[in-house]
Amino acid sequence: MTASNFPEETLAGGYAVYTDAVGELRRRYSFDFVAIGLTAFVGAPLKWIYSAGATGERHKRIVLAPGHGIGGIVIKSGKPMLFTDIDEEIDPQEYSSYPIVFAEDLRSFCALPLKKNGRVVGSLLAAFRSVEPNHVAVYQQMIDDLGDALCDLEVVSEGFMNFEKIVEEKRPAKSGAPIPHSEITRIIGAQEDERKRISRELHDGIAQELWSVSFSLKRLRDMSMGAEERALIDEAGANIERILDELHNITVELRPSALDHLGFASALRSQAAIFERTYGAEIVFEGELSTERFPQALETQAYRICQEAMLNACKYSDSDRIGVSIESAGGWLRVSVSDAGCGFDVEEPEIRGSGCGLPGMKERALLIGATLTIESGEEGTTVTLVAPMGTDEGAL
Image (cartoon, rainbow, N blue to C red):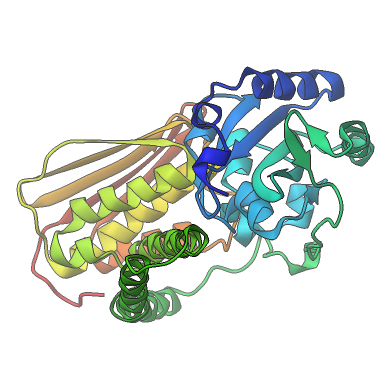
């Protein structure tokens, strides 16, 4: 399917019938949140364009590649999804795969693929912010009432994906023993080396091969052939571009080239841009540095600490705006990441994900002789790193 098959005004938010549809679904079934996500063409990212019951604009800034997030998974698989208790049915380590869950604090949802001209072009998401026994019946009633159509789109409501339920005993214990200091240090060093290696292989190996294939396709398109063949080549080229974008995001997550070539601040801004697209939160930078480069050990550890702080704010704070302040003076680097979100108990934080985030941040700060303070309450959370800009020793 091409963009011409799907009106541009629809993607720009000009289709009032979709706006009315999500509002009516929310009213009729008492959903807390309803949204329609659409793509411009096959292989293009999905955006949640039409919604009802949203807590803010954050969800509209989420951009999902095929196979990522609820909308991306639904589009790539062409199958519906259903979770009636997210905390019970999704591994906490996989929460980051569903950014809309964080953006709208969802606890139960049903996502249905939407088709046009026989191809999946979007997703209908209906959700609750609570867990109730009758939710399955509500979702089923909505499916029965919709039949196979929503406005001018076909609704796919059969063949739900099966997900393994994560039972309680598989989760990390909240009162588990802390990881020893020496073990975390060893893990950090090995992890950083492995990240460098994999990032380099992805960039210098797979990415370069894909660029070569893309170039060959462009040369092939210039040869004499029919419109159908050219359309297939264009679609293949678009898919390669999407894969290259995804590879770029992965390499930035692993070890951004900007960290090695441009320095700490540039790498952090690059990572922030990816988090903005993924989670929908706005990340605003302020402050200036007295120098662009720092010792390698300082750049690496400060970057990882701030990366984790920004990620936690995007995923757990429920804040639409995250502030990052960077400054250096008098031989010290000071960086703070703050949000105006829900906060958490710093002394006994709830374990979400792997549970290694905060201990890892503290350990990294110790490695460079820095001070890391975490303040959190009803007005939000602020993570502040103050590190000496000393000599480059033991770069990890």
